[in-house]
Length: 464
Image (cartoon, rainbow, N blue to C red):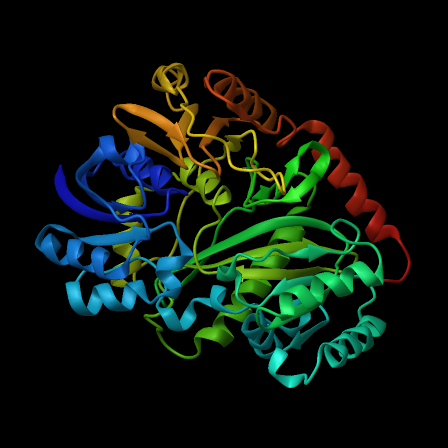
């Protein structure tokens, strides 16, 4: 088989899943050159050459890529930090290594406000009502408060977001994080002290995640996925980066119709064409969009757009990819990506997390060990039905230690969602250490709740 050198720049999100998918190639023999924030055991074992850069400093990544560029065919990343910093632009110019991700100009994670303004132009029907607040426009705290209250007359049930997510400030949702004007106002003013703020209408409905990839010319929609953002079961607790996700055996999800999927994919493609313009747009290469979709009373709205794969949802897609991932990347780079095949299987990701994850005000735990041996052995014996993919864990002196974020993505793959869910849950129970996970990811009860809720919403008269 032909040897192919692949650069992986990882923040310990889906890096292990990316490597795992490449290793399933039957046509190529991939060799991995890894730069990551810590020594992830999966990436460390699989790398031909490995380097730790705790802050993924772009110069360190570039120097590593330069050093080995004659052996690297292309690279991928699992973090928006690299994309928004112009990582592709720098590596392609200075190291001559092609990256399968968008260029900085199309990295929409940089600004929630700019996303809304873009959607006004290319996708207005999918844009919820919104307002953008810039602290430089207000001479006093009282002036900002009055402007916010005026917007609440038009958007009485708001979602309040920091414009620049890299600041680390959270999103506030009416009915979950606050339910009075006074509390919403306090949340808003706290964010505004740090920079621009976007206030959007809270759209009632059921969520999904829509991914599409492109070679800069062709638009390929991927199967829908559903993620679970809240830390506790029954969608309680605080918002997190995601506790797990699933995809079903079809392009759509079990609480949606095939026509929902077809309409969404068609309208997303039309919006992409407007965004791209005529001809080919090389900057739009790789995962060009990962949209959080709210399926509502009438149609859908886009809650946010990212330019990389969803941290758990992309794992669902990678684990059910039928085409050779190396070949898919080559087709993206040479502009010949006209289709991508996925298996007719379900995939359920359950994230094992530290006991303190998503618990506001709880101090981080002392350094603690986690043992993946029994779970990984079961995965090795499962014939691909179980995959154990380390995330925020690191190797220290031969031991695997917990970080503070999602520790392990445990994936079940099967013909149906319930069987995949059972495999994933069994894998979680084999992990030893101070961890927890949500046992209701992709449960029949949760799927049925979504089906009933959306059905009732769409039968309701009036509203959006």
